Image (cartoon, rainbow, N blue to C red; front, side, top):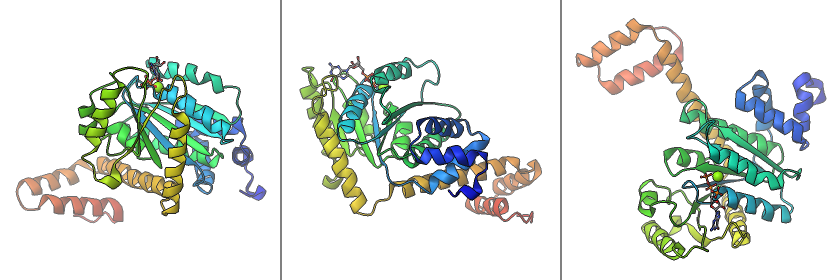
Length: 321
Ligand SMILES: Nc1nc2c(ncn2[C@@H]2O[C@H](COP(=O)(O)OP(=O)(O)OP(=O)(O)O)[C@@H](O)[C@H]2O)c(=O)[nH]1
Ligand SMILES: [Mg+2]
């Protein structure tokens, strides 16, 4: 951004791109709360995304994700990589002990200027959460973080959606953390690039690993996740995990996969859907009512009505359908 366009916000936004911590914190808060500064931040940030490796870390509650994230941060710092972390909790906005625990656990990185950790509270509907997270990933990317880790709790559709923002998805599983069949059913194994069996210090880990390998053996070979074992509390297996993630990231980049572009695609599609829904809700009741009557009377096919409605929402001509 040039100095000539230096309205008040541009000054601090420039500092964001110089790796300034306070500016990054302010930018994230602005985007998270959708303040008037958010649009300026995002416009500037979107010209500078695409450098970071974005890693999604998901899995059942208590599987050891945060402990693992902490160990991964330590390993990445040894490799002189800067790290941004977004800890997302879709289920419990303000009550979640998990978030508090995550913050406490990550405190050992608090004095490190190369690490930036932020919890993302859930607000509004799920789509809003994943969109919000996508924007925050972009801000951290533009803010110069080499690696952005996104931790999500759970194994449902929401986590899959959020994990979709990542270049590399790591699914963490631990003995007793849940039913492996459930994981397979929820499609969580299908989205995994790396499947981590954590807590392998526990004796049941052998069965867990076998069950997960069994469940993922149904996937076509090229989509089968790499399976790795860790003991996050001791840091065992973490270097191998980081090696695998960096290697997969490099391979994806070499094959022309552009994560920032894909995230932008998701954001655009979601924004269009939002806009269409908002405008549809603003339609005068009689317009909608008439259309409903026509469909119910069999005069207009449902698909035709949808197309007509969409056309009406977009061309702005106000013509009758
Ligand atoms: N035995 C053993 N315990 C572990 C290991 N990794 C994590 N834990 C413990 O498992 C518990 C949960 O760890 P977290 O890192 O909070 O798990 P999480 O998946 O982030 O949990 P949520 O965010 O609440 O879903 C903690 O008590 C950890 O100390 C491990 O490798 N072995
Ligand atoms: Mg956690």
